[in-house]
Amino acid sequence: MIGTLGRALRRPAVAGVVLLALYAGLSFANDPRGYLGTDTGGKVATLKVMKERHRLDPDVGYWAARWDPGGTLHPLYYTSRIGHRWVNATTLPMLYAAYPLYWLGGYRLALLFPMLGSVLAALAGAALARRLGAGDGWRSAVFWLVGLASPLTIYALDFWEHSMGVALMAWAAVLLFDLAQGDARWWRALTAGLLLGAAATMRTEALVYAAVITAVACVVCLIRSRRLVAVMVAGLAVSAGLLVPLVGNQLLEHATAGGTIRASRATGTVTNQQVTGGRFEEAVLTSVGLNPELSTGAYLVGALLLALLALVALRSTARESLLAIGAGVCVLLLYMLRFGQGPGFVPGLIAATPIAAVGLARGWSDVRTRVVLGFALLPLPLVWAYQYTGGAVPQWGGRYILPSAILLLVVGLCSLPALATWARAGAVVLAVAVTGFGLVWLSIRSHDVARASAALVRAPEPVLISRVAHLAREGGAFYDDRKWLTAVTLADLDRAVDVVQRAGFHQFGVVGLDSRPGPDTLGTFHRTGFRRLRFFSDVDLHITTYG
Image (cartoon, rainbow, N blue to C red; front, side, top):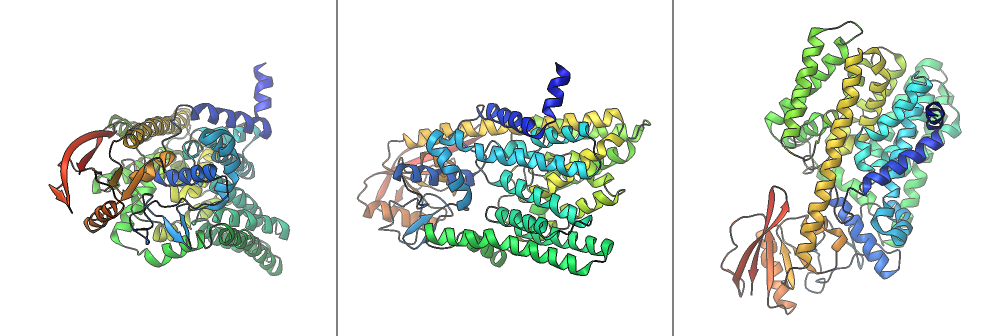
């Protein structure tokens, strides 16, 4: 019976269905009105409005547009005005793919989209492991560990496009790995381009991965085969395939939103983001950070963790090594210290995907794994240089570089059999433990966000002005259930008070993190009350009422 079940689970279709079912079960630990990040809230707010209006229009509207035509105070931070529409969504393909699911079963059924992405990414990991020489049994283990002991587990349970973006890029990497091995058939290269283009409609960094991985595959193929014409045709096929989804997405955006979303977002990233010391710090944190803070101590702990994991990977062979055992104990202590701080984000790729460090340390001995390491590592400087700043701390596992995490993870998993039994088992247990820690945090966070957002919706003030940029966006499930304004700066606060007055309201509340009451007067309004609301387990919101 057990043997029959094991053989069944080695079949990709069966394994995929089982993994999907496990994701569905895990999702019920979370509140469907709270999320891992504010981008999810913006997407859910858009889906909510689309469903209420019964049309495929991403316009979330703005109740105060008459008095704030520029949208400076729009409740959903990062909302853009495109023509007569107010658009907060960062990608339309994901919204339109998930809309029928949301219409039928709400947020829980819409999660089928990211869940399917993680399943497809796990299947891609298994396919790549086969190309790296993994046998049937270990290839099956790769599938389950990628699916259940990596950041993909977390992103399967939140309505974000990361899992599907990684899946598309991972399957493209599989096809381009074949190109690097000499398979230069144009239709396979074209398929890889289509996958990369589809990923780029959801994830801007996919453009960087597309350029670098394609270049690596073509150069390696050319060096090995000396078939210049075939390699050039393959490279052009990838480029042609890449353009098709991008052009299609542009047409979709113009038809439904009246302008560009992804292209404007990518262009804004390139032109407005500069390489600074702060950017370097965020790159370090999202690469190795175990502690969710931008501090020298966090960088040093992350670097130490990487060094210790690499030492265990290099020195723990079949023969016992006291140095490797000591390093393993130190790794365990670092994670215990982090877990002891309480649930929260683990922002770094290596910290959230510790087996990736094994791949980074041991993957250089085989020519095949060196190609995959090239796919994973060479795009990183460009991604670091142009990724959005300000979001390095509140994220899980280096979300901008997740494709690299999964590629390194697969190389690490293929390298695990060379380690001593204790190190191999310890690496797997550690990966499961940190993923479980993330699942606990997602559950706590979703319930906290939902509880606090519901309380704010029930607040007696007719208008709430948030001094916290993403507060109303966090509560995307409640969007339009009450009137919000978002005023981050003092100048914005003055404008918000003016809007409240011009709109004819005689009372409002200012919501912020400051534990002290607001000023005695704002415009012609006087302070009438002050109260506290628990947001997260260690974060309070404070509401000052004016009338």
